[in-house]
Image: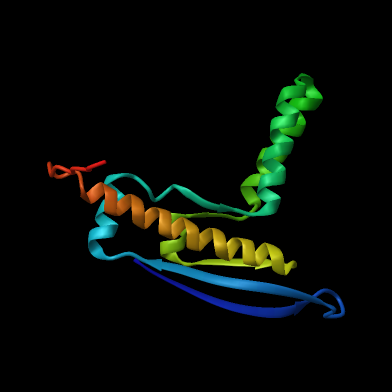
Length: 140
């Protein structure tokens, strides 16, 4: 599995007085890894949720716990807003994913999460390959 990431930035805002940081990430699994991703249905696995998505999820859960019309309306609105927030899955990374943030720490967090997710996915795929009847022996 190969992960490619490219960082960039652009000016934003009415007067160009804001900086938007961007990260383009793409995972390129080998043919064997792609077959395992398909076999174990890992494509929809979420590997990164933006800070906004996490806040909307918390708000939706809070609204659902409140109950009543107001609580349920808040939950529905927050769930809809979460759907519009950034989420990265294995499939979206294989297809190429662009992440834009106004804060550098969030971009770095996304970068670290993607690297960690790829390492975890690689470990899972390696483990999945070991279910071939072989015997492992440990001595203690």
